[in-house]
Length: 95
Image 1 (cartoon, rainbow, N blue to C red):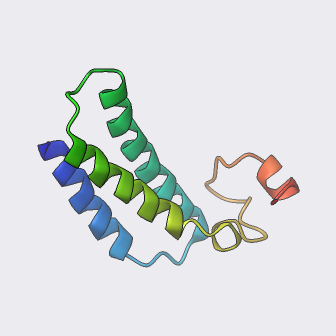
Image 2 (image 1 turned 180 degrees about the vertical axis):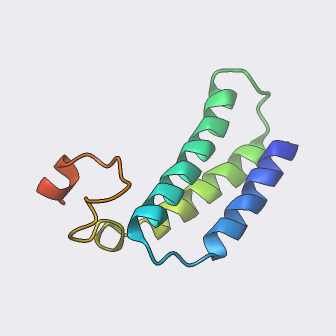
């Protein structure tokens, strides 16, 4: 539970920072999303006990992450260059 509280605190801090670089912003959002999914995965796999309040908090954080994910802002033309591991297919099919 402490890890969950710490992760959410870190997410709140990270969410308050404004990113000028779309590559850094999308990487930060995806890392955040991965951590949240990992927390849920541990519960699903039975590696951690089910705690409804903790799961709900994680799901709400995941929803907040998804609401910040603006594809036009995060994947603007030209952001396929630089320190990115985003697949080229993203720029071919933005739908």
